[in-house]
Image 1 (tube, rainbow, N blue to C red):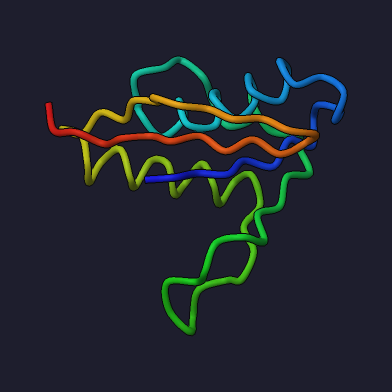
Image 2 (tube, rainbow, N blue to C red; image 1 turned 180 degrees about the vertical axis):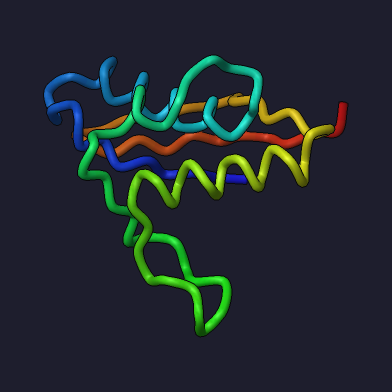
Length: 103
């Protein structure tokens, strides 16, 4: 599982901050963190990257929709842990290799 997180909260010159935002966005999916989506992303967050699940699904998701999606994921995959094993950052882009595994 590879994830690329947009780092709108950090500048291209601050690779450490960019890596932190990317890592925290992955922690949201693990369910093993006290982080909430609003702790990681700006209030006006919009995700235009994900492919809609069906023709009825929206092509973009706001922060509230992300929180709902995270809750559904945690409910469906409560026995899965996601770990981050590698991370590369350049400019304002961060690529993180994350691995899911059953508990």
